Amino acid sequence: MPMDECRSCLVIFLFLIAVVECKKIDGWPMSASGTVQTNWTGTWHGTLQAYPEGEIGAGWNTTLEIGPYPMFDGSCTMWRGIFKENGTIKLTKDNRFCRGHGPDDLYFDNGGGGKIAVQWIHNVLVSPFKYNGVFVVASMRMREDILEEEILITGDNPAVQNVTVSIRAHSIHIKTMRRMSMSNSGEKSFRSPFLVIYALFFLRFGFLLHA
Image (spheres, rainbow, N blue to C red):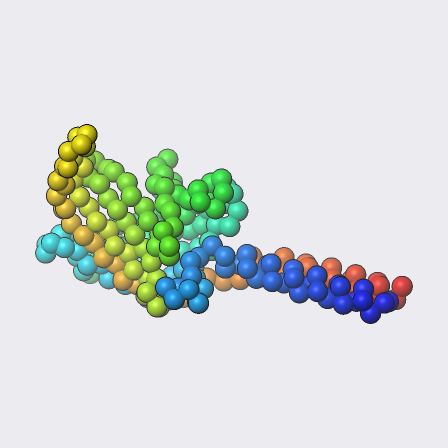
């Protein structure tokens, strides 16, 4: 087997490894410094703060389960939230984080036909929506090893052309969570295609070596 051909095979093999490795983590944003790839996949636990004082949800314990990033059109991943007060479940949200057509077509699916569009603005996942006469803006981001979500709820006064309309804020909810465990599903989805490429390369390499 010519040395040049052997080197070419090796370069292709290393390139394929790099491509697969990038696909494994590509969906989640970079850190604020732009040097570290963050990964939201896993089980997160924290506490909900709600203001003004006495707002519903204040002090609730929160658990958020996030699956691997949806990398392909039509794919969805788990986004399940559980809220407890004094050990009693107060609210469960069995949502899914989905990708429609293209990497910018992202939305949350609540399983009952409701969908909320979401988008990345820099490294912040933002989802504004209206519901029952209120306007809600939810934003989530990583701050070092903390996953933080802030939800601002305001009134939804109708707009008037060329007139500034004041909107009163109702409440603000802040969740700060730390990762309790890392899901293996992302690693498994990466490992299978990698092993196939690995096996095919060495079968090809062995064939050329004995040719």
